[in-house]
Image (cartoon, rainbow, N blue to C red; front, side, top):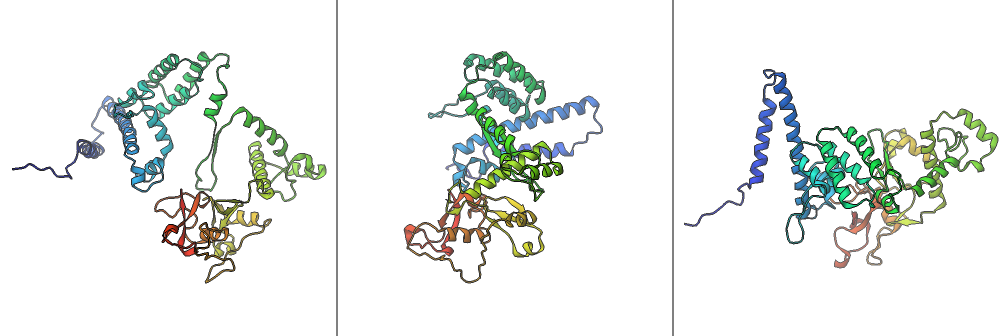
Length: 416
């Protein structure tokens, strides 16, 4: 008789995860009031240690997900989208960087490679440090100049990993600052390559009130240019969106009397002055056409979609082609000084939207019509939120190669 095994039989990892869920449910129901103070402290501390060990295991599983190309197999555009959509991670970029530093990868022959930060990885696997400690150490080590010898950098990793087992993340940052001062006391080892490696500028997601944080690490060159620009544009009385009589542009071009009067009315903080100056500069760049004429078939302008009822009552939100939500009041104020595109779609339009086999690429009018349609503000793939400004027009029902026409009802936005 031949022995058979069900394909649905759980592997060890599946059984372990099921057991973890069972134990977690039991721990949630456990009565804590009968425990001594020492026992409560032990349970709380060991629960946190177990949480850290599970986080380490999760990072290793992210490596396996990437190795099996599961994002592509499930229709996600990359590993970060998979981590966000399928694994429900709130900060996938942070977790991905964490996994790269402490997880075990394999070489082309399938042999395991030592983690990038082996001592920190061992402490994380044992639960003695958590994700906050890991990232604090990673931030310190990232600031070590490339000119420092490898054995010194390895020793620094061991030292910081040991500190992480008993320090808080803020204490790790302070200890790291002392370590960096010891490694490069004169600050001469950091070179151009180090600065280029650390440069970044990131627009974070919109918050509930519509605002967003801007995170940046600037090279000296960009910092100098930005500082010079702010000295000229971010002056009291200049570029004030709340004052219709405020001069715009550079201070040298402003009427002195008008500027003086506007400055007396200006109650903005220095940070608000900087914000408004940058906004005014970008508006001037758009108005001057310095960015070109089109991008992915769309005009390089602020493209906004709003409901007519919201415009009539001056309330609600409008969506831009890049996915940003704007208050209708702000849209009306901004649109008062520009020539808007008005799209009204019932049965037909004056613009040609049905090009047939005459051309393969969608026209600008088709791009605008597509954006104006329901769901046209992002990629048409299920679960994909790439905005229209980063998507291309795809022959949705019948591909061009199969004889499909470049017609509006055969086009849909799709990210690359």
